[in-house]
Amino acid sequence: MLASARTVAFVPSTDLGRSRAFYESVLGLPVVSADGFAVVVDGPGGLIRITDVGSALRVQSFTVLGWEVEDVAAEVDELLAGGVEFLRYPGLDHDDRGVWTAPGGARVAWFHDPDGNTLSLSQPA
Image (cartoon, rainbow, N blue to C red; front, side, top):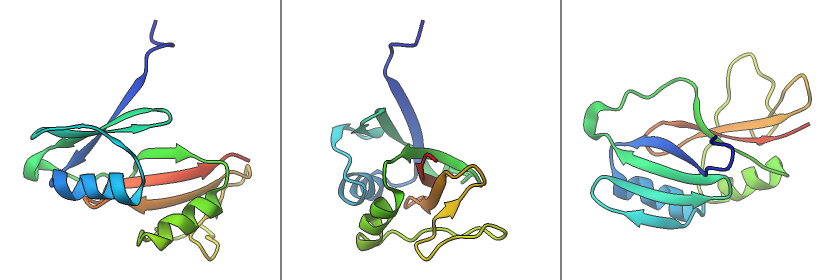
């Protein structure tokens, strides 16, 4: 039933202006709409609705949004140049860029948006 419907992901924000600048300028996602409640950006897999949650945001410790990319190293380099800092998790062996290679060969890098939401880039094995 939903196999042909476009996905809409939701990401919480405490400051829509700051979030818009990050998702639009740093991540390069075009803004589709913006109002006092949300900023909607377009991505290759669907829309991302960045929703104002006021001060109610409780950041989660897990990844809330990610992108599958063809070349994780190139994407990480581009984001590093834009000021993004990549996360390193204890117990995982990261390369110089902060990319972890999973036992199955997938490569993953994690970073935060301005609200501390964990985002990821992954390159399949």
